[in-house]
Length: 435
Image (cartoon, rainbow, N blue to C red; front, side, top):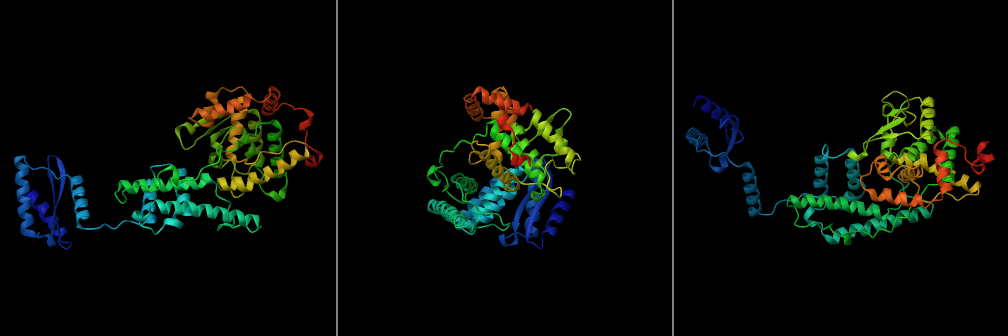
């Protein structure tokens, strides 16, 4: 009893100023914690000691039952509801708390996506609105607001006075897919709010809350002429001092012949590349994304040349670092590296009397090009899936079917390009570029 009295006395004294009485003791080989109550609820030293003695007597007889803490929380919640309305958090406060709680539970890119949707799209519209005030009509108003915002951006670009963000980047119109993605994030946030009983139903659910997405026009960069023009344009820009970056050719080659995602390419380090065994180890957001990619001959050649010319070649250095050794991001890759390459490649193709690149070429579409090249080189669909880091065979089979519809001559020209074999005379660079 000495230990019991000491524990109880210390606990009571410790919480005396806060007017809270608790018991801490050992029972049934476990540490127990029992909250008795506050002075406002009628508890004092004498009553706390009596309750302690009663509990310890029950412990000795083996009839004491530890309190169900979860039940206590449920009872408290029921009492709060019965006592009156509970303050419902605002959208911003709840969404930020959810985002902070996901750190460490989901991948870095998921956190970045959530931050993008929340900061740039959802918070400006819903920030100070209590969760239970967000209804279906308000979600529809948000969708219409984003459509109007997209139209405003398009009109500003048409007038030659584009709107810009804080970094000076042009604010481009929002695709239906982008707007729907932000509504998906809103639905996920409100789903959690429903689980916490802040709202009774999720007003962002349902297809009617979203825009109808137009069918995506396929972008196939799967001819030797188009790929050669991209590589020639990148190499020309690398040789031109005023364009500063000197790794465009290696970047384009890695996207086309290595199948890297934009974020994977930006994060790639030299320790991930083995120029002796001719392979790259790359990772992504899923287990399927972790893969080893054997270098096609043209990629091996491009990476070896790039490393020989680079100032950043230590194992932990970024393969495609900025001039200061920092990491590029996917926006930098698209806007400051690929945009110029695509523009010049179009000009080269027109000058050569060939069809320009299809509209919509992006780093992601260059991954599709990698899939087409693999199929043209005779790689089976299962291996193509692995090298792309995919688990769904539908895309791979679509690419496979498309490439099999190409002429045998075109597939042969792609294989010749990949294996650094000479193409026919029509691929010779024009005098303007050679100069």
